[in-house]
Image (tube, rainbow, N blue to C red; front, side):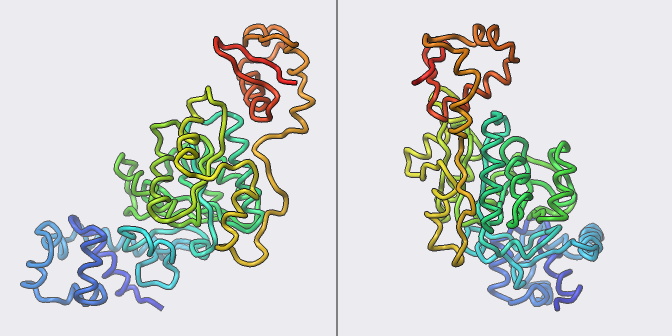
Amino acid sequence: MRSDTGLASWLRLALAPGLGSSKIRELLTRYGLPEQVLAASPRELAAALPRSAYDALGSAVLDTAVERALEWSAREGCTIVTLGDAAYPNRLLEVPDPPVLLYARGRIELLNRPALAIVGSRNATAQGMRNAQRFAQAFSESGLTIVSGLALGIDGAAHRGALEGGGSTVAVLGTGVDVTYPARHAALAEDIATRGVLLSEFALGSQPAAGHFPRRNRLISGLALGCLVVEAALESGSLTTARAALEQGREVFAIPGSIHSPLSKGCHALIKAGAKLVESADDVLSELSALLPPGMTARAPMSGVEPNTAKDSPLLKLMGDDPVDLEALRARSGWPAERLASELLRLELAGRVETLTGGLFQRLH
């Protein structure tokens, strides 16, 4: 079992300003364990380290940060996983610049289980949210752990769906693991900490910053066998995750949508570039079959739409045979605009409605 002294040495290097993961790995290659790095002569360290890091190694500020992290890791369910630990996620060793240590709250055994990343827009449609939750639940029921980023929209829906199944979920954060962002997901984060795992490479107390999220995204894809994008605009952080997945040699999947929706354009661009088009959970599981343990298949194939219920939608009867606009449908149905838009998208995905130019909708027979 690793001693507190050993962990303190890892933390002292990781928390020293000016020392990134690549520099620390270089020092470990040269000297061995962190204790051996810190035992090097002052002259050697002064030559090997940036001045800011060298000056900080013996500082009271760094002592306090290390002590705080050690106290946190002594709490129930809180773990600091170092690059030298057996619990370190094997798949992250394959990514460029793997973190030297990870702060985890929850079930760390999930970090080495077969996983699928599910990501998408923060401003998702109602249909996109349903797709993310239902697909995540189907994959979780088949035994896959779902990895996402705890953001609003698709990420949150994917985590919720995953918690309904047996595979559970990993939320990779762009903050310290003790900071909940966004605040609206405080209850979800607590649920994940109990039944899944919250994970971060950033020091405790780290607040959200623009540069954190691209680094988080490479871990989301790196932990997984593949990455499913549910909804994404062309300029989207989800596409950053998908690109990271491609660079890491992971499979990339995308759910298509309306050609008129900005949130479909990112998925369509991925499909054009070679991502696998997904209509059911089996589309993903069949592609990953060679990488999955024997017997891991979907218990119930999930479709992104509901064709049987779409056939019976009352909105189809109200549309008639001629093109109709949203205002006319609202007057005929008495439905609020949000419900109308959601149902029209569902019917379009099911192949029962076509969106025409000029904001018109046509029922398809």
